[in-house]
Amino acid sequence: MIAAIIVEYNPLHNGHIYHIDKTKEILESLAPNQDNYVIAIMSGNFTERGDIAVLNKYTRARHAILAGIDMVIELPAIYATSSAEYFANGAMQIASKIKNLGMICFGAECDDITTLYETAKLTTSKEYDRLIKEYLNQGLSYPVSSEKAIQNLSKIDPNTVFSPNNMLGIEYIKQATKLGIKAQLHAIKRVGGNYNESELNAQFNSAKSIRKAICDGNLNLDELKVPQYVFENLTKSQVDYDKLFAIIASNVLTINNVYEDSEGIINRIKKYSQTTKNYLELVESVHTKRYTKSKIRRILLHIALNYCVNDLCKIGKPNILAVKQDKRHLLSSIDFYGDDICLNQNAYANKIYNIVSNDKITNETMLIL
Image (cartoon, rainbow, N blue to C red; front, side):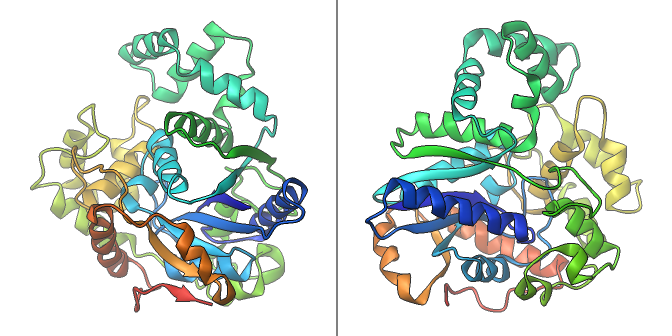
């Protein structure tokens, strides 16, 4: 049986290995007498937080293989830097191209898949959409509007909806249903540091706390709690945000619309990109009660990557980043038919990544490890 997991590995840490091991346990329980495989659908060089990966996608794909993944497929940059709905849609499009897929396994704060399915159904109702629009028109942010709509329509604990991994899990369910995917969906309960935890203090540190420690120059293997092969690739300040700021400030002058900007945030970015001194100042200046910082960072990345309103396209040919030497037969389980638009977008994203990151991509060919 083949299981798919959707990941970022930014960077890969011991909590991710726990997720991989639990996925394999479920696989073994569902198909004890079969050859079982785990395929990771992984964000490339840019992430859903609207940030730049601390290590390039090939480095992280190699780490995934060493951690026990059999094959790594790239989630195209335009989907990887999207809000939860389109992030999940891209991941499920790729999942739908895996022949004989039996399971999709994701980490979540809530591992009650029935509750997640109920929430997914509620958030696709017409009344939910009506309330969302009503609250947005009052100037509230989307997360606040969604929370108020849920509270009005059900007794579901808002934490079930608004914990970060739960939100993605609910979107995976919605998009898998939309695309007619028959594979079973399983949620593995997240353990260790919370998703937004910024300090190193847990058995399984959050990726955010690890990234902060790296930025602060705290490169202590025992404190970071990452595998040795990941630790060997980590150095302080991998990303040059001054270069990213320069690209954004230049690009924004010549574009009229930006992907995922339906509210004219680009006008605020145009204004403040010419008066602020750096990337962080720009994010703070554009930020308002209505626009979350994550949304702003994503739109800033879309500007850097030249993603306009109509650039979101269906995923044609998946990009395989890495495969185990003895699992190369898995390549025959992937549907490679379709256009190359996302692949062309990814090639441009690679160039931007090489400008702003110290972990350069030097060879854009699939790794066989």
